[in-house]
Structures are given as structure tokens and as C-alpha cells.
Image 1 (cartoon, rainbow, N blue to C red):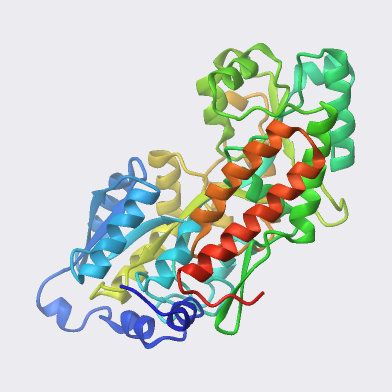
Image 2: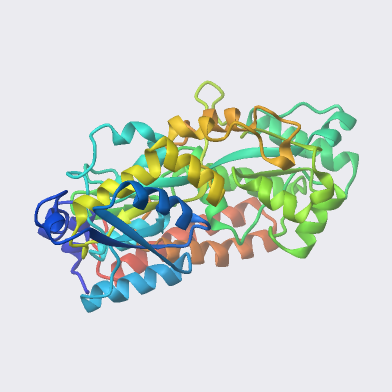
Length: 437
């Protein structure tokens, strides 16, 4: 399906007949009940979700859901778009990462289910997460499932040994970073990773940035915004002076640094305990989690790194029933508890985020209030809008910030931001989107 620039943007702001029609298919009961149960197909990669779906199927004989496991990320998106373009083979339900939703919406692949879900649905989720499934409009293109609120993880034993206080502002973070490195030149409070665009996006989201926006029937791109520049200048300055490492995360070298204590902290998401347990098992009980340092201590905020939602596709003939299921899956206390138990997710649903997670992760057994604190910070995520070519922006980030970390200068970090902005805008235009500069 090749859309013109006007219809692409119109799809995103939920004003096209395409999405209105897609949402009108089916209603609970009606002829479907006479013909037998409504059968929905669900493409997802969430581990153990079959057991959660079994709970629904047992209680809803008239709406039966079949799980079809897929690869996550780009392969799942490509497969869905191929099916949508062919006009057949698309599922009724699709799990999608938040950053992929604009691409799917602009391709006409997702239905606007705002008319099929409860009006109080938005109240279940932090504003920053809800904005990701509405794209800042009145439409609802998916229901949030899990989120990745960012936190600060640090070696409590090393902090105690050096007499350091946990930083609550970014200025304090820089001071602690310097103190750690001065105490031992092999130690760093963290690293700037040039191969994790989602990580950097979360840091800029906390600062108040939103990389994309919509004005009328045009996209706007604000990667080169004051907020993003602020974050880039900050980290570029720390890298330039040598207070922070400049090596990528998720490498053998980085894993070893977590184990031997040369990486004393990690700005990461709620799923970090699993990574630490897998890569640095012997350090269990030595780490603690705290809120991210703040730019403005009077207005606490965080960003997200990761997370996904459940959408109804535009080719589903049973949009009402599909919307009923996705609402249940991601807000019903029994369903959310099952997602936690069977799939190990951190639920986006605010009411369930602490009730379903009474005990801390095993790796953080020394911090009983782990999820209580996480729930508080998760609710402070700033709104953020992704765009239809976020994959291009992420690829440009990897290329440009690799050069910046190699150069190790603050100016290079700022130039990298400018280059990512230029590459993203150019690709949008080349793809036929209207861009308001």
C-alpha cells in the first residue's frame, strides 16, 4: 500500500475513512454469535502469553483467541505490512513496539479503536505511555501492554566505600562520575553507548523532548531541539573530560565491567534486573535502584526505554471483539497478574504495576520497595511522539554517535544531533511525507 503524503499524515491523525471503516467491523453478539464463536488471531512474541490467553478463552466462549508466535521488532512489522498490502493474511491482533506504531498507522495497518474502548481506558496508563498509542490525537491505535521506565542502578557497596551520595540531579551525577573515576581510573559511573538509540531517546524524553510531532497534515521533526542538544552536550562534555566511558553497552567488555565493578552504575529501564542477573550474577545484592537524576528537581520526570502495545489491525472483521480482548489483556487485574507471572513483563497499567508486583526482583531482594519506587517514577514519563521513519533516525544515531564517541568532543556530540535531524527529515521527504520545517 503506497500512500501519498497527505493520506499518510491524515491516517496518523485519525481522520481518514480507511481507519474509521476499519473500526466499524463487527460488534459484540449479533450475527457472529449465531454463526458460532468469533475467532481472533493474535500475532505476538511475548513469552508465556498463551497461558494468559487461555484464561480469556475459558471465560469467553463466544470470542476465542488463537496465539500465533512471531519474531519481534522489524520482522513482525514487515510481515504485517506485507499482509496488509496483499489484502489478506493479516491477523486481528498485533503486538507492536511503541516506536513502530506510527509506521504501522501511516501504512493503514492499524484500526482506530477509540469508539470501541471504555472512555476511562486512558486513566490506566501514564500520560507518556498513552501518548505513544494515540500519537497525540483523539484516536486510539493500541492499548499499552508493558513499559520501560528508566531508573538509575548503582553499586551500593562502592558508593558506601567511597562515601558517595546517590545523585538526584544531573549536576550531582557529573560530580559523582568524576569522584568515581578519580578514585580509580579503571572505574566509571556509566558509559555513553552509541549503539543504543532507544536508550538515548529515553534520556531525551526525560528532558522534555519529543522527536516528532504533527501540525495539520504535516510531520514535524524536533531531534535537533534544545532539549536533545542539552542531553547531547551534557554527555559529550563528560566523555570529553574522561569522567564517563564511551564504550557501547552489551559487549563482552561491558559485561565484564559489570562483573568486576569497573562499571559502578547503569542508567537503564525497569527490565535491567534481568540483564544484571544474566551478566553479573555474582554481584546480586550489591546493586540498588533509584530514580534517574533530574534536570529540574521540582518537576520529577523519566523517559521510557522499550515497551509494547496490543493493536487491532485494519483488516480485522471483528474490531469490537478484538478491542474488548486487548482492553481485558492489559487492564484486567487477573490478566495483568498473569502477564507478570507467565511473561515476566512490567505492566503499563498503573493500578496493576504494584499490586501485581508485590515482591522485588530476586536480583534486588535487598530492596523490598523496588516496584513501589518504579511505579512512582513510571507515572512521571514525559509525553513522546515517534514518527513513521524512526528506524531511519535510529540508524542515523548509530552512525553519527559512533563518530562522536570516537572523537570524544562535546562539539562532535552536537554535530551528531544535527546530522540525525537532517537524515530523518530528508528520508521523510523522500518517502513522500509532508514535513513542516
